[in-house]
Image (tube, rainbow, N blue to C red; front, side, top):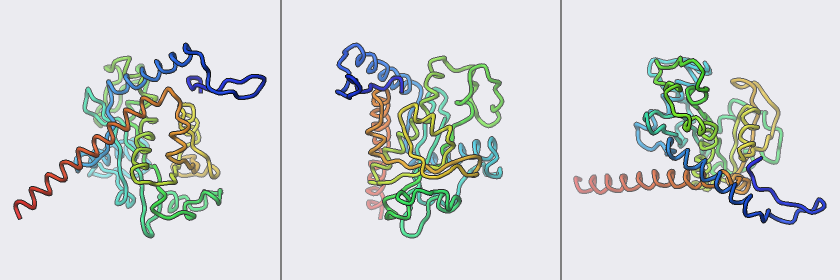
Length: 287
């Protein structure tokens, strides 16, 4: 990756990180800019309230049902399946409008519960060593249902066509906001990483388009393909990653963004714990 600080070498031998203070300063400055721009316009959070979870399902309906046609449109305007019974969700809120730009879920099975790819893409994983059936259920998860609102994938010159579904007119956004858009998807995977770490899950799986895998790799999040491309809502392949690998591979340009996301995710979780404790005390006081 162009912005990642790579080891220097002498006659082909790696000798360590570059010592140029100018190079390091430039990379650190770029990293701070990315995090600052993102934090100015967007907020990552965990969907904990009923209202936030409902927003997840509505956003997924907008993307998976109305836009992409992967699932049938329904009058409730929610997209939900059996795996949501044992999933956690992250959201990205666009601060100036209050609209949710993106969401992703972490499916964490227990007992005999399955991952989505185990049910719908059985046989897609050909790397026997990394098959989820090799590991305890509590040690595996699937990062799935990543949905990015169409507005936040469009260029400023594109026609605004989704106002009826609550979209934002990109023409009304600031140019600085548009610079953040490539990092929204990356931020969802980074937020999911925080959840995976909090649950002490060792192995994570994703079914994604190879093009998306290449894009995230360019940003510094490198998934390992563990099977061929198959037909599942388009051409997709199974991928494997661990939170430890995401941390170790993270380029310097994304580290401040990761720190900010981790802070925001943990803050939303801690605030939920406080509210839950207060409600518990109130309930006991009234019993």
